[in-house]
Length: 337
Length: 259
Image (cartoon, rainbow over all chains, first blue to last red; front, side, top):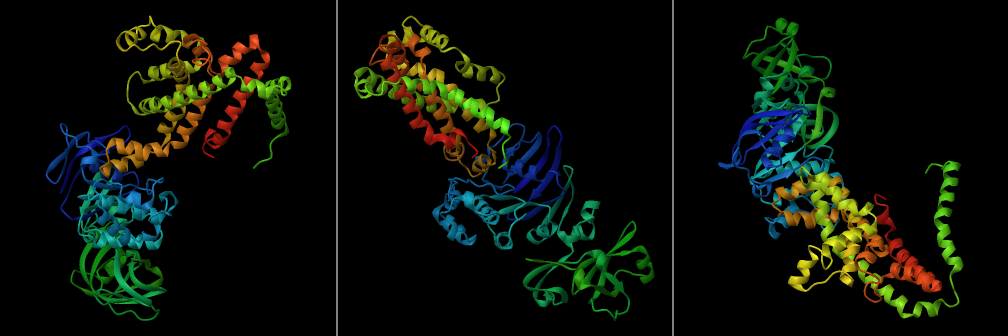
C-alpha cells in the first residue's frame, strides 16, 4: 500500500526512512519531539518532497526523482496537529469541502462523530475536541485510501477522544498512519509501531515485540506499553482473560490500565500481608538490560516486570518458572478507553 | 487598560488640534447661508457624481487587478521579486504629476501604447473619464496591494494545505479558503485605495485634464473654483469631506484590523 524508501534534507534536519504499510493496516509512528514524525506524514501526503528515493502508494509512484504527484491527486487524508479547520465555513461545509465527498457519506460521518447539533455552526466557534472530530470527518469524507493523523487526541476532552478512538479502532475502510507521542494511544490503536528517533527508524514491530525487546533507550522507556484493557466496576477491574485487579480509585466501563514495570515485585511464595494485587504468573522471557532485568510474564495477565539484578539473583528465575507478581493498586495508571 | 502618561495625552491632543485646524478654517469661512444654492449648481453636482463614478470604478478595478498582484508578490519565488514590488509600489511615493506625465507618454495619443490603442481600437484615453479612472487606478493600487500582500503573507497556510489534500483545485482553494480569510485586509485595502482615488488630483489633471462633466472630479473643481469662485471651492470641499467621512467611518473597524 505505502512503500517509502527515501530521504529528505532540510537545513537543520534530515530524515532517512524506509517503511512499508499494508492495505487496511493501522500503524503508529512513535518518537520523541523533533524526530521527524510529522514530516513523514507530509512526505506521504505530498506536502514535502523527497530529496532522494521513492514513494509508492498502491504500486503507483508518487514521488521520485522524475515523478511528483500533487497532493490533490494523491487521495491521502491529512489531519494535521492543532485542529486546522476552515473557520469561516460551517461544520457541515467543512466536512463536505472535498470534491470527492458525497452527501450520503457526509451525513453518515456527521452522525458517527456526533456533530449533528453543530452542523450549522461556524467551525471557528467549535471547541478543541469538536474541531478535531470535524477535521477527521472532513478527511474521511474525501474517501482517502490512506488516513494520516498527527497527534489526533492530544489535549482533547474525554468524550471526543473516545469518539475518535472508537472510529479508528472499528473502521475497516482505510489504511491509517498515526503520529503520536502517547505510547498507550499508539498501542491501543494500531497493530504495528514504528519508532522514529532523530530522523531514523530505530525499531518497528508489534507493541508486544517492542515491549519485550526494546532496541533503544527510548523504546525501553515506553513503560506505558505495559498495559491491559479491562472492564472496571467500582474498585475492581476484570481483564479480558479474567484476571481481577484492585484499583485505588473507582472507575466504570472499559479502561486501559498501565502497570509500570518497576512497580512490580516478584515472589517465589505467595506473598501475604499488605493488601496488594497478587497474580500467579509464568516467566516467558528474561532480558538483561544493564543494571536491571526485564522479565516478560504470562498467564492471566501478559505484562512486563523490571526488577533489580539483585532480586533476580536471589529469586534464581528461569524461563517457564511459575512465580507470584505483586503490585500496589496506587501504582496503576488508569485511563478510560 | 493602562492609564496613559500625561505627556502622551498632551501631545496627542496637540496633534489632533493641528490636524483639525485646516478643517476648522474651512468651516469658519463656509458661506453657510448660500450653501444650498451653491451645492445646487451644475458644476458641483457634476463634479460630485463624476468623483463617485471615477473613485468607485477605480476601486473595483483595483480589487480585480490588485488581488492577483498582491498574491503573486506574496507567494511567488522569483529572483527580481523585490524590484517588482518596488515598481508596483512606486506610484505611492511618486509625485502624482510625474505619474500623470508617465501615463501620458504611455497611453497618450502619441504614447507607445496609446498610439496602438487608438489605431487598432479607436480608443483614446487621455482627456476622457476612462482616462481619469486609469489615473486613479494607477495612484491608488499600491495602497491596496500593500494591505493585501501582507495579509497573504501572514496567514497560516495549513488550511490551504489541508484543502489541497482534500482534492480541491487551486482556484477553489483561493476563492473559498484564502480570500475569505483575508477579507478584513481586502476591505481595509479597498477603503484606503478608494480614499486615495477620491482625492486624486495631480495625475488626473496631467493625464485627463480638467473638463467639466468628463474629467473634472471634485478636487479638480476645487482647484479651478478657488481662482474664480472661492465660495464654490469651499462648498465643494465640504462635499468632499462629508463624502469621505460617510464612507470611511463605517469602515473604522477594517481600518484598524486585529480589533
